[in-house]
Image (tube, rainbow, N blue to C red; front, side, top):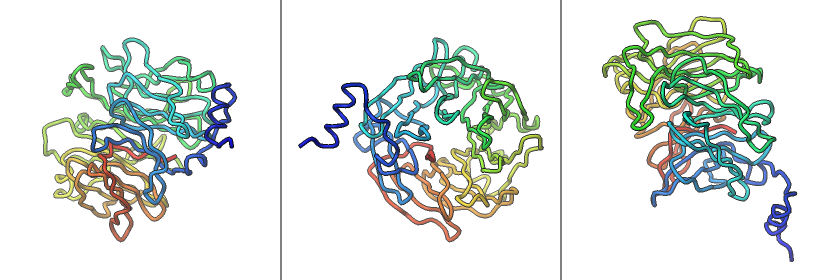
Length: 356
């Protein structure tokens, strides 16, 4: 009797395999990268309940990922400065394509699909100057490189598609780095910014932080359905400055910086690793694996409270609150009543949980 797996394998061999949807791999709600106890790296699909729906090996440490909007296909990005991104068939585990940036470029750990999955956009920088670039890949042509355009700043990290589907928001961290050892080269002259670009690279809006916060590197992003952007920062100046690590922004408006009480701000150790709106969008949170803290804020920037959890970092929206991960293999829900453990796996979760 021909099994379903053998049938699909035969179609793959003839080049006419069906494009399987996410239902074929258990309808995961999230992607996350991790290292297991044996030191092996993998990309995981996760359900809302914290169950693993698939696991695909990676050749090295993964950072973030991007899920195709229709197909059970994901792109796993190496940690910056990266030289690879793998396009993975999450149903078979096969690597469909190995993406490499052009000579003299590095990938910066994040990317996003656009145009209903027809394009992949990647966060990149030039190795010699850290000038930010957005790479463009033609998905339907086998992820062929289709060009690039300026990110609008130095050292871009996370990029997100805005709700209109036609605008990209870019967290330009402002930090120039040595491509060999990640040393920071321009701390005295940093100029982080948030840039909004059309999909062909035209600038729609941009803002920079005030001069006294020019060392507050804008790193990670969350976008609400109405276009409100949350941005997480990492302070690159003298330690213990207790600067705000979360901001809120709308196109055409001035940013709002969300501050926690001084003892709480100090506990974050100048570092926010992930940011997410809650499932209902009424609030948002940032995490610090350095400080073992999660801070919650209203969507106007008011501080709502803190949760302590060792090595917490990954964060994504979940009905009733958030899904969070930590470096000890824990997956937990964060609601208004506090945290609740969903699962503990034999792995170290990397920094991000990506919503599908």
